[in-house]
Length: 307
Image (tube, rainbow, N blue to C red; front, side, top):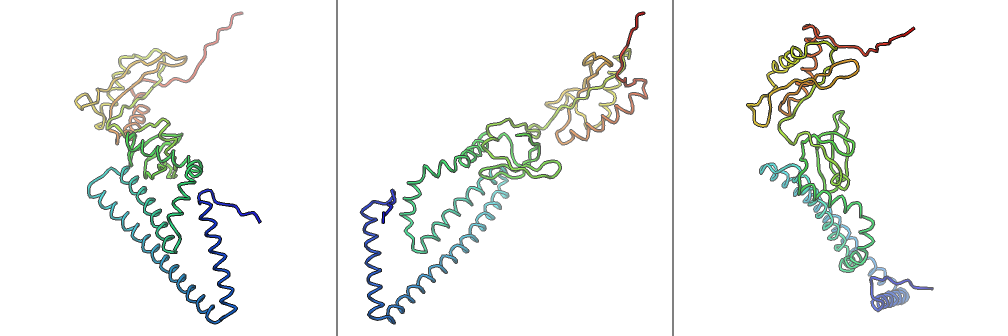
């Protein structure tokens, strides 16, 4: 029989352990042969001791898991009291939970009598293999640290990244959770998130709106621009240059297309009012421009036939 050795355990120690097992087996066989009752009594005592260790390990694990939940709850209350950024609090809470869980598992194993020093040496020796297997997870963890450092977004922001647009609801140590407008939940790993483009719609307090309106050739451009400005300035949510960071609404001829003259209308609003103003002005343009004599053209083509 070929004995396979563990590269992380010295060969002399392995031989000593094998000899100890052989000696113990031999002593057990002699004990059964000489005094079976005493041998089985001793076996029962050892089984009882091991059962108590298992029971103690279970109690320690249950108590430890309860303490970890208690610590997380206390950290969350502390973060809320200090009004800590939810992105930071979510990441730190997740990271602390993982570290405490690993320590609890090691403590539970040591309670069973397993030599945690040998276990640590084995994990250290297999670190390269573990690192290769968890390379994606480590990359996501590093990406999370980069996001925490540079803060391209925070919990509560509406962002667009990796083909998804939604509100950031949670940030763990390896991924960010987005809730999409249709209430779908999407997890994006930090590795690709930190290395990709992130469009943050909530970063700045003000945003600029833009409407493009196509009208028939021959319209009075000055009258049309005046009407567009009248429509947009009638909305009380539209800002002007008196607001820091905003500008007065403007209207101009944008382009001359095949079938229409395109006018552009721009105005500044608060971030929270973006969609309300956008839809309200859309409705006003569609309703009020025709009432003022500005018609919307249909695509058309002039055909000249020469005989």
